[in-house]
Image 1: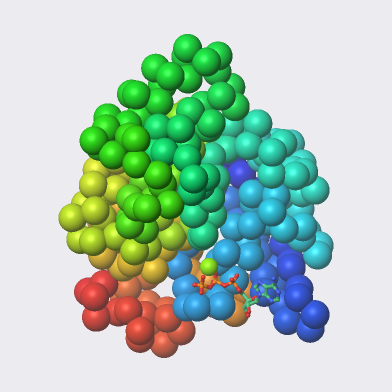
Image 2 (image 1 turned 180 degrees about the vertical axis):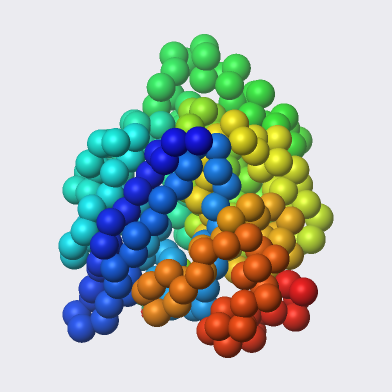
Length: 241
Ligand SMILES: Nc1ncnc2c1ncn2[C@@H]1O[C@H](COP(=O)(O)OP(=O)(O)OP(=O)(O)O)[C@@H](O)[C@H]1O
Ligand SMILES: [Mg+2]
């Protein structure tokens, strides 16, 4: 499978702090990659550079062979990238269905968008909540609305920062099922703390530590790695094993 996304010597500093310190990264077509690491390890900063929300201090990002290092988010989204940031990005005053419609209208006619919104409501199992204001929903449900808003435009690359945060165990299962239904058909980068969730979905895992990539391997190897345990899994390792 070909490499679709690549970063070379990517850096981002804030004042004197190097949040991301020279990351070389590659994602292959159809791959589902999880990024893990302790709080403050640099995952979201790295993620925001991929999505165009933050400009790198130095280094380069290429997507489908095109240099996207300084492109804004909307231009990256137009290349077929679906982006879910750590903080849900919803129109709280609008209903679930209206949020999906807004997202769909990015590319579709009004009639196509209405059909797509109804189909997506089924897919995220929220038809019964279609008319509720998203601002009134629990966090896990808000996460699904946002997933629906991303998937409605059929992105080839999906970037998710903490998609399972705030979900109950049952909700996490439904999220896993949704991701499983797309495995291999789209490419994913998923930042997540929930080790149970990662265990279930992960193929290769990239471990961030102090702005760098500490290890990149299968989940089994990552869990066995003593350096990773010291750096991160001390907090979470028990759940992971
Ligand atoms: N806008 C900012 N201004 C200043 N410092 C920042 C900013 N964003 C991130 N940092 C710092 O950069 C480092 C990496 O933060 P980042 O949010 O990327 O970590 P993370 O791995 O996503 O953590 P978490 O798991 O808590 O989400 C931290 O030291 C953080 O305080
Ligand atoms: Mg983060």
